[in-house]
Length: 318
Image (cartoon, rainbow, N blue to C red; front, side, top):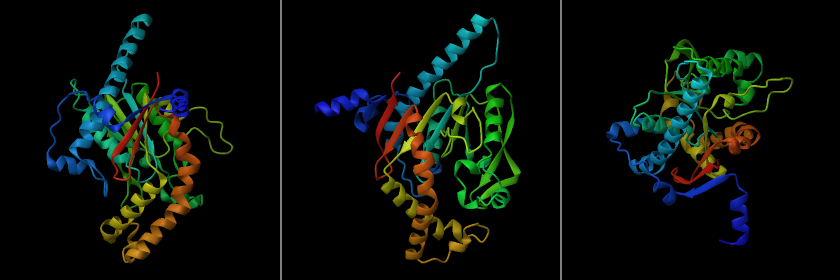
């Protein structure tokens, strides 16, 4: 290690682990997955293997389990001091990162692995897509092409939900988003019923900058007990986005009910050009202005290589 590398290491607030070093921290609990379960965990065009789960997510689950134990012990000690008997509140994990980086896969795999911890906790998963304003509202406000940007979310309702669940309220219903319809479903809700662990996944969950004119002092991340940022090079993310768009064009977009059915008959060249245009006009701006600046607010960073597998893990020092 050169002197400059050593100085950089010691000035960083994160501990850095290469894949080989990280996998040696395996928590040594067993996981038996059926082939169809593995298929259900990863998203379109995102490879997932048992080795990835064992080498990356087992140590991650072990680390988070330690934080949960400390969280529960701290709650018990404080309740004893205050001579109050309060109900156990869920441990909330936030997962952030760019469009197409693989947040959903990370969230689903983590949910599965955490549910297999020795005490078999109840783990719920919630995406913030359901808290997007409905299309009719976005159209009224001339923001449909800003969907995914911070101002396109009903942040007040998301904060109300988080406040309610952290105050001990039970059986909370949250809105559901349909990627087929590209809109929030008015007649469908997801019930969050007393989870031990709640995973919240969304591109802007670590965002702290209020919109112009707002004086909001409470942020979504204030309710997180642990946060993860899924990272990759912009070139790789763009490649994944284009590949995913083309795969969807050949499958889901063929459905006449799909909001994106208008792209179904594009040629391969036209499809890739359209994906690149959407990326440059919308997703790239959101990444640079709103998502990427939040990376170092996270407790842990999963850095992926071009093959979609994690190559490096960074953990905030404590």
